[in-house]
Image (cartoon, rainbow, N blue to C red; front, side, top):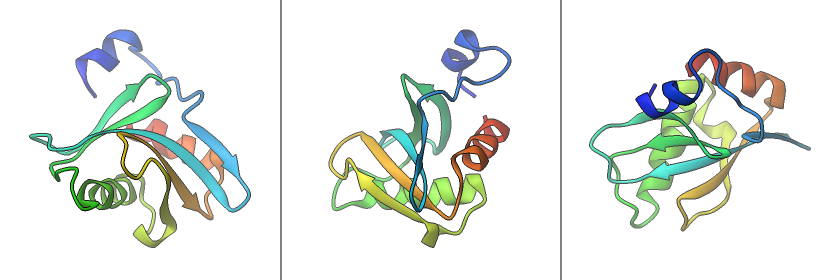
Length: 112
C-alpha cells in the first residue's frame, strides 16, 4: 500500500467506481504505470486501481504484464481476464469472466 493511498484512506479502501457488473463477469477500471522499477498493486488512483508493471508500454507488453499480475494477485486464472478497453492508454478496463462484482470487490479489499 502506498503512502499516498494510506494517507487518504487509513482503514478501508474505497472501491466505489472501480468495479462494474457485466453480463459475463465483473469489469475493473485500472490505471497502469508501465516501466516502473517494481511491480504490484499500488492502491487507488482516482476511480481506478493503480497497477505498476516493469514491462514497457510497447507491443502490448505492459498490457500482458497487467493481466498476469492481476490474475496472480487476485487469485483468478489468467484465461479469465480480458482487456476490454484502453489498449493504448494508461487507463484500462479489464473483464473478469465468471466473477461477480461483489466477489471482485471482496478480493480487492483483501489485497489492498
